[in-house]
Amino acid sequence: RGDLLVTVIVEEDNFFHRDGADVHVEVPISVTQAILGGTVDVKTLTGVAEMTIPKGCQPESKLVMRGKGIPYLKGRGGASNRKGNQIVHLKIDIPKKITKRQEELIREFDKEAAESGMGMSGRLAKAAGSAFDSIFGTSNKDSKQDDDKKRKTSKDDSVDNSSEEEKKQHA
Image (cartoon, rainbow, N blue to C red):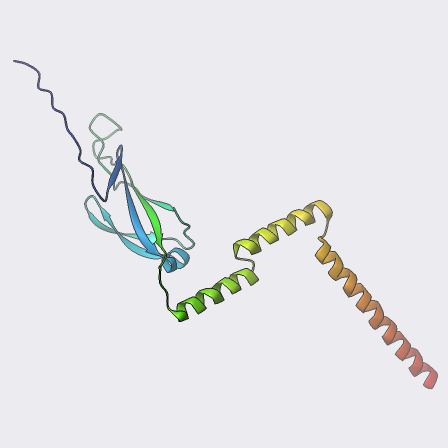
């Protein structure tokens, strides 16, 4: 009578990548899904599950499907029915070719985002402006606009005053 030693070799999978009890997968999504959100079917160890994609997903976003990983062995990690997680790495699929209409729409979207301050340059400019305001009070741009308004108001007041004085003299 002797001891039996068993070595288990887990073969690599092309879709699932193991990290302990957790399983990692890459799932492609469209640019539209990344911006607007939606749902995507994700292959799991036990089948297919629908996953909700939140609005505004960024490149390299990771979402977690709790309990969809590999079961823990008895005696390790608590109860035997406990499982690891499945980590879904979202890969935004950017098309290589688009139609002329799609290009027009994307350019229009980019212009609107820049004008509304939602684009990267708009957010940076806004952040820089607010930092300037917090340090110096108001930005030069605002100060110049205020000065222009004051000049215009004083000119309007003087025009209004002179026309009222002329009315009094003629009356």
